[in-house]
Length: 543
Image (cartoon, rainbow, N blue to C red):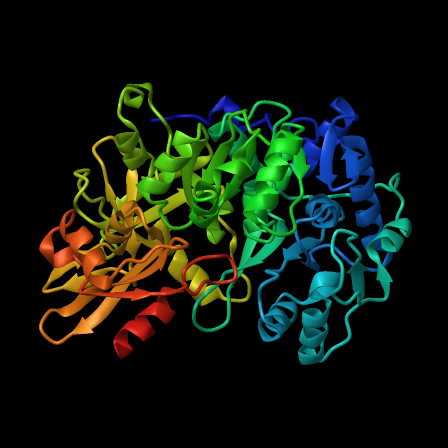
């Protein structure tokens, strides 16, 4: 017990010399000063160095300030994965404003809601989305300055706005001093959840969390300097999992990509020497099933970071067979993207490909910058046994969690109840501490009192040689309460019957887990590519 004040509690204070707010904006300054000539952005014929990119970002921040955008105010972008949106991740917060990168797949009504709820002061619009933006602005019902982005790589669309992006940049001065954040808790970005019902919630990111998660990406993926990163992941999704800022940390190159098509992806991997990309399992599945001739000439190892629904082991195995290395991560909009990482151990190197893939399908352990993750009883928040069987909810705690939901204190309090962030994802905890998701709480199937993981069944379906995609939901049943219903997309040219799919599942699953019905056809998806299981559940109820 201390009997007198500790000498460390007085005289040792925070000063301008020893305490600077953490912000990822410092990564841009370092990249531009240390590696000024290294390529920062590639987009077709456009190739810009880090010093050129930094200058454009400063002009963007300066122009926004001269247009009257103030600290803490929202700047919205409705744009594809192009250099303009990459620059916005630095230029907007550089003058203290908040970047709101809007999901380009939303309808005008949803975009209007986001513009109103986030109180956007100015909107930048790529010509591809001009018509949608014009309708959204009509619904919004209040005037807002609009800047058009005229990307030469896209023909058509509708260029709207008071001026275009390049002319707007010309209004700014790269030499102008921009203050940046005075407090690392200040907001840097606003992202909206892709909820399936009701209005989306505005997730507020702070500079501290963006800084930490950007560094966490580099550490957890062992990113060497000068990686070549392909933008298969939308920059509007969790700010591209913070990778615009991560690429500044390591002075890497961003290869922009407007539309994810397998031919374009593989061509850029080959021509630009792509070393890394991120995305949902559907991107891996697309590459996995691409014709062999599209992969010709690709000799270097490519690393893929994948999140979303748990990637089926069969998909991971297919990528590994190509010599591509898959890292599975887990996160939500509320935690800046990936915060849980499937860290690989040397002791697994001797396993066969199938065993390796099964381990890689787990979500993993906490990343370098997350303070804690646990699987616990959602009611008591007591950790479940690490036996790989007992299901609980995933909880997180750390500095790379969001500030809260904009203008929604009730939802914020619920999310942080008990001093942990409640993810709503159900998982088991393995003996080695690795987390493995079994389902969203709303997606678990309860049949005859038994909990059935839809993900487990989907993993089996993906092993079928003729199955391209699969999703499983609960279907009401008079006897069992619920039974699994499978929705399947077959590979091109395949002809498989419902009975054959069910028989395949019977050979690999316990009887009560086998789907009792199979529906063939395309899967409905959200704007971020996630399967809309609520739509499938509605379809299953009508069968």
